[in-house]
Image (tube, rainbow, N blue to C red; front, side):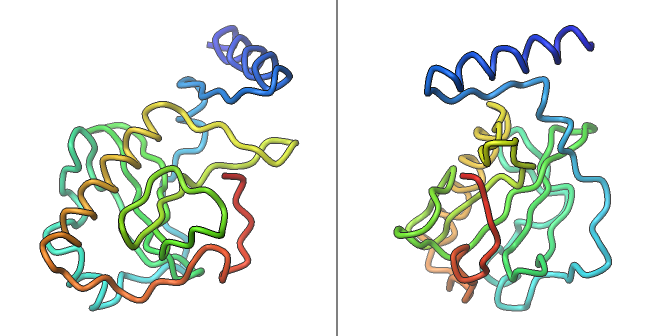
Length: 165
């Protein structure tokens, strides 16, 4: 295991030095979320109405919603993961085309994988995290297309929460 992680770190360094981006699958589990913090609240009634059947235990393609809450920033936070495995957090904010680049979007929303930044301010997003964020965006877009009213979420920029994306 150590050798695989070390190889991933070396590969990330080589690609980063070359000016590229890299996603290392072996690192995705290191940012797993186990329990929500005490400051996290259940989603608002407007958010619940928008999400409809999308709740804890629901499937988003091959991922399961393990946790769903309103983060202290006002974003809707999902913890998604494969059935029976650790998950990772995806924060949903109001879309802001002038702000930080999200990993996935809908017409009204921007999705960010909540990873710890590396020393240079960038973060590694594993392929399964990117796929999960895109799957969640497709699910949320379907809710928008069905006419569900999008809740008034803050933009990432308005929260002044630094994100490396």
